[in-house]
Length: 360
Image 1 (spheres, rainbow, N blue to C red):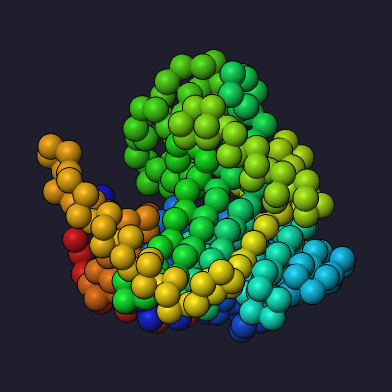
Image 2: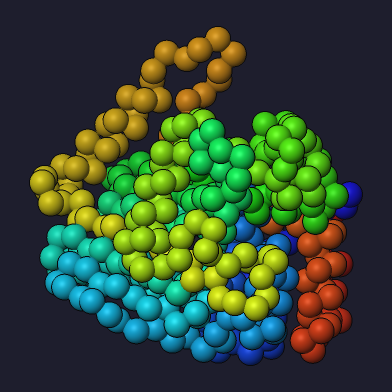
């Protein structure tokens, strides 16, 4: 399989043109493109530009509102409930975290819940924004069913990711992002698109057998991370993102890939605190720097060369891909070219990008 390394700026420009041609305004197109390319930069390719296909397909079929519309419902000095009016998830969640940070800066704490949203991409983008604003943040989103409750044989919960962000001083900000399943469903979808097998332990078939076939996995169940512990966290994510916000939950969330008749009604939840609530910001950041250095100095197990902090691997990969280009498979590139042609985006222009990439 051929892989091409793409320049970040050129890839972002390409994706902006595609979403603009698909009927989105320039601000939304830019927000979505920046987010997807950032996911690729951080190595979360399942949430990167491979999502352009399904996003544009849902826009084309009118399942998602092309206009950026939302309503502020119940609001207090520290919280607000948002009706996303079935707008695209990434612009909604971007607005949501910005609003939560704004309230936190004014009141110390900011809480935003969004209902009637859609797939919001990589949660790390939102908690990273809050950390850059000297805030501590927790973000959750629910997702269409793909995981059974612990001990069950029927899907109920989604991958239900959770992320946190914490600002540091001289060190890098700590950004953690995980699915409560062993793996994000998007990684299985990406393996399916690229005709790759998946590792054992990611999912089981609908008959309960282990499988390396992504098609069988998508028809079956994705396994929870850490067994009952992952199930317990998935339950919390479902409550915060779905029940608490007023969004759909569990099996009542519309499928991103298979349901082209009804809105998803996904929920997102953001809890943000100013990092100086209990100590001066400079003192808190110094203590963060200290704990980071102390963790690095912990004696290592045999065969372990380095202890990483949460999000450090993704940060280093982001820096590498920023300098060397973003690797995209020929299948993803072909999808982007096909979508460009469908929407009248200058295919020849972006074939130049294809040819200009470095084959690896």
